[in-house]
Length: 113
Length: 111
Image (cartoon, rainbow over all chains, first blue to last red; front, side, top):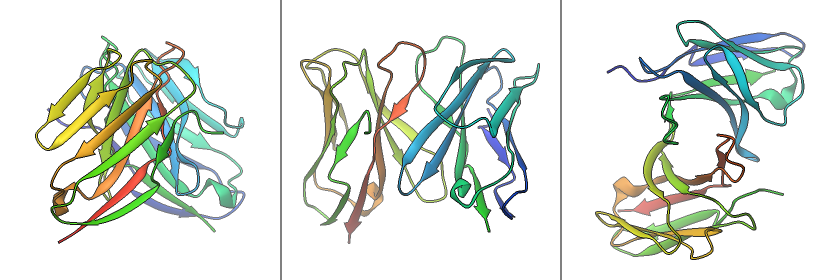
């Protein structure tokens, strides 16, 4: 079974630009969560999608948004990028039983210049 | 203020030594999880503890859930270089399927 796939793995943007990150969950997993990881703040929860609906949302500004498609693939978008948005963005999926175990992708490392 | 505080933040030890990592909170959790993250990869689940006072062993790793379900510890016996990584505890205090992660402990085991 293929794992969680995130693209792109690395990207560099400048302040004010926007970025879209993609996540393909494990086949059969309907829940996709996004996290931001930085050295100073650690892993911070962004949002979770389940069956194309945002089920939970963390404490991030509205510049951070996401969506989920009918095939459970998910995208997250960050608009008007700021230097502080530089981080590793991790996507995780889990199955419908909500056993709690998250399966993470390798992440998308975003650098904002 | 972080929901889950881990200590120590950094730990560098020699191969063969023992160590303990702590995960503390003022909140009660129905369960706590421990993940390990290696460079360039996402976190991988090591264990889930569910019952207060529960002890689980995974080879040289021993996980304990506090009686009050507010804290947990990870003890590694005879650490190996392969144990090097970022150790993260995680829990959902609200039951809303939001998994909050601890501040992390970065372990380096020197051969």
